[in-house]
Length: 125
View 1 (tube, rainbow, N blue to C red):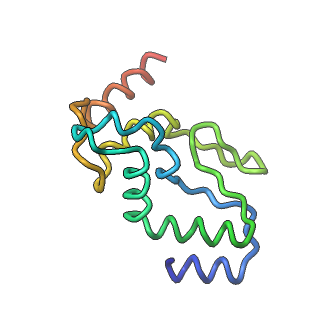
View 2: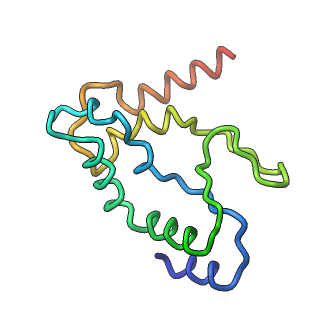
View 3: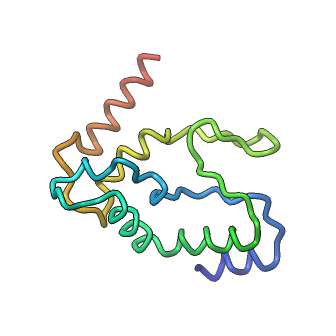
């Protein structure tokens, strides 16, 4: 865990931690990879291992009974002064096969194509 977060957790009262936990979004993900031997559990464990800092944050928050929320579209803080605009949970999950530690993904539109398509949808709205 980073020294800065350790100091904050030790010296401050924290109401909630907002952090993405991609390892919790691996259900039915194995079908998105070229290698048929990949399992949902193997992807979950690979993500956990590659994101040690985030896992450390999660573990400290759980140990200190700090509420954890994933910052997806629509989440607000308790004062309603902060509103998360993106990403959506679905978009976040669609990017997991392209994460740096995952096996080769099946052919899907690249990140740039997804961003451009998403921007087009926003402009249409």
